[in-house]
Length: 498
Image (cartoon, rainbow, N blue to C red; front, side, top):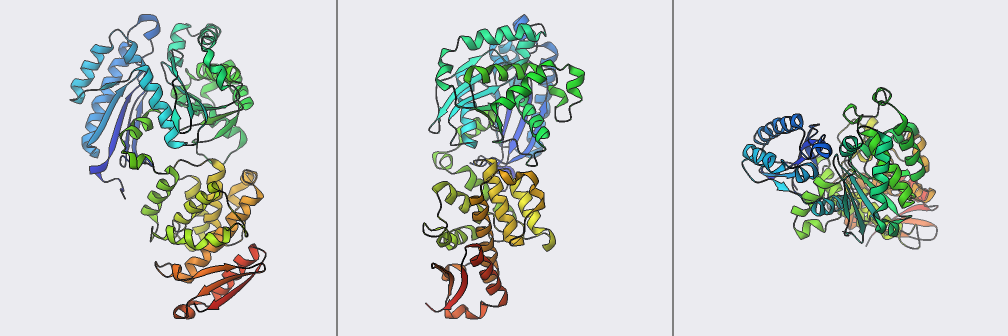
């Protein structure tokens, strides 16, 4: 399992219309873990609409950033690096000249993405982080908007529209009223969008992430993870309308708005507002994954692509933090009888979350015992993995809490208690108590647990322990078995023998 050794690191430089960014991942793997991330707001496409050329100051800033990024490549140790250019460089008259200068700095060819490629890779990036995504992906860059349908784990044919905030600002001479007419005309020509009315809209791009941060702040939402954060479409439209009316000075005073996005934010909000209206969308789902993750996913072999991103991410985290990462498979099999059809039952999606929780069961072991429960819960809530929505994160976090604390209720969750159902609360408690028992019984070692098993009766939870391990069944084991059985409305029992 890669832990980000220099020889395995994978980097991407994204030469966008607004920003130039270097990201370095621990490796080209199913769960991309960032080890370095730097962005320069170069503004390459700032004057493209009016002049047909890249912004002169933007060129200088972009090339300076590229020189630093190449030096950082050597300093960090990034053997595999992709440099990709998008809409501004693609559409500008002097794009070829800029590419030639940039390639001289890099010492290798830069990938100039077509609009079709950019749209496909953006959608593929969303799918790599949200495999079950069904609806329409919108990736808003500085110079363009990519709209791509996604279904069945695959992107469909989409469109690239010249509706990036920088281009709109230039086209409309900074006027939102003029920009509105441009957006209305462009979206009105996309008849195919009617096929996706009422579906989910997956939003990608820094401007839209800022809108999501504002929504989080309004709700005092404690899970500060943008990926798969869901905004009701009405809320997203309302926030967009408010942002459109605010001036730069007011926008700059909003704590959750990046200072570098202030100019573009009203125009990005306008585009989102118009899209929600055209799509009659019910929900906007924020994706932290987009073009760069799509490029990375494209480089993976078929076996790696086929992995479940959540399970891969949990294994990566356990590999870094747990004493025995292999424990996850033992726990998963050992706890299965508790979730059999005639006990708690579980759907395939619930079984997947149980598997993930079992992998993460030991990530909090190394901190002070008084803080393990809240530490494990926080680690899971904020962990850098994908393939799970916020309700799933909360379930996993509660399991991590109960595994250390028992039946107590975590104060940290606050108003998040309504995100998951009572059924999921019950499942999290039972699984957490079972894992708590597992560590006590086995002494947190490998190999012993599979020799024991549960037998679940109508009124009892019986733990069957071989004669060889009878002495391990002490007072604490009996106490924790009793707590688990009570959570299932049963009594605990021990049977020694085969």
